[in-house]
Length: 246
Image (cartoon, rainbow, N blue to C red; front, side, top):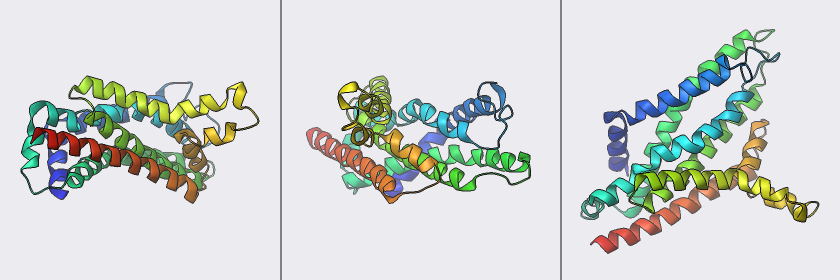
């Protein structure tokens, strides 16, 4: 797994994909948090990073599938998946190596945003008047959400050798699992009955719950279940593809 992880990280930074992803994310977040008046932290009368944690899922919904779209699509298209079959690597080594490489890149993109938290901490009146519990919970929720999006993106990459199709499918699935259950729960037919249960099936509900600063084991278990589910499916697809190519 470590060999695959190193190979993927070298590929990301060797082709400037990693730098591009980190730069795009930070530029977009910087514009929303400090420049655009409707969302600028400087316009609000209280110190917090609510805007970051509201906007970040929307950005990751497209940025992460763009990062993962080549993970397996490129291997299948170029035939290097057959080369991997000759190496002493299990299918889980390959899937987890690629998964953690993409996740590490997302974490690296998030690290500079800690400077925003330090800035807000210093700008608060009095200094330090920031809800750190909510900030920690939001970061934890965002990391778990990112892990779910990466797992979804990897599955999409296994389903098509065309990277554009993998990107579109990944973004669509991220949207479905993040928003669709919330919208479905609001349909009149479910109101007052199963609306709460259906809403709990979506990522948005659990992410917002963690953003309040309360890290509930049920929310953590939900995200870990989503990640595991999509990784298991990705493993099954890759195993089938490898056996077909042998």
